[in-house]
Image (cartoon, rainbow, N blue to C red; front, top):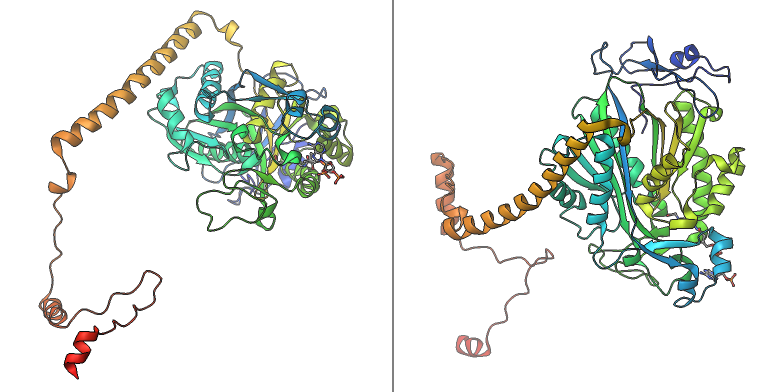
Length: 487
Ligand code: UT7
């Protein structure tokens, strides 16, 4: 799936002119003309290139008011409990040396009993909202990417919406395994750019430690828990998602998954609610798809690989990132990595990596960055994003502190609102009883012919009931006494 409404190009030292990219752009409405916007911040990207967006008019939007969905806030939450490779040696037949050399992982975080996808997702969202300086009540849409929800439904997104007090927001979970965050980011960006919403919260949150099969040593040593979130906001400042490639190949569905309630039977070697993976096959798929989809996404954005300041990939295995860097012929340092600290946190790994990359000064305003996810489904998702400047909280002064206080008030209010609503529903059920008593179901008026048919039907004996599987019930055997009497 490709974002066709806009293409962007960098006007940089690579000699790639904006004109060339706009000429290759089709905006779907026959409008061949592109519009050129400077990103307005005067900053150059990490490669020393000044960036200029060349943008074609979205098909449905007003030509004079282009809409962009910029990332204006981000946050992460990781549990405090650190599980080192040495800790795993005590419970699994493995060694620190094997895990480090095969995966690059040194430690990961596990959620405590009190922690879960909901409160970690909430904490990440709260930090992201602070950074964006936006009230939860301003959010229109919450999408949560997770493969380890507390329930199939209600969604994790609804539970987080409740704690945040995001009373205006629609909320749903998105299932695309480790690609889920980028899928969700694309959905939210498109909703903003189409004009249907203005602000969205996209969260990736996982408690993989609860779905580990501790008898499968090649898989259980890989995963960890955590959450990350971003806030997207609509506006006129050029930036945000420049292109996106979403992909799926269900023929590889058996390679990686967590069987759950709808399964009639579970193949041998798998367990209900436990993660299984064919590591070698997924490794092969991952290295191939990273290469292909990065090339495709960069091309669709009208850019070149040299225009990319940083790639923030799903953190699965350092060897996958090294192999991808080799095949793309870019330095390994272009791929941001924190897999040694957190292991594989599935849908949470990209937003967590994004937060840490920004904190470490690896992302600057005007930079073009790539987010790339891959995993179960099989699925993959690659987005090219132009990062926009967001003022640091420290520079925002008194107004910021006041609005931070207002956010805290919203959270407290949300807590009491949820309790009040639960009490109110119980009270209503007690006082009013069944709503069916007052529901007025009106019989549709029937014609004389229909009434005649009904009379005929009620005169004929009912047909024998059918079994649930569709077969007719076996003919009732006459009771021996009746049979004797008849004879
Ligand atoms: O988030 C979704 C995306 N996920 C991924 O991208 C994961 C992709 N896959 C991988 O990262 C790697 O395939 C693994 C890390 C899972 C496995 O690494 P590998 O190099 O492919 O190992 P392998 O499965 O081929 O196993 C090699 C050997 C085997 O022993 P033999 O048969 O050669 O004697 C395994 O039994 O390593 C053994 N082994 C272990 N030894 C010590 C497997 N797991 C372990 C272990 N400790 N934990």
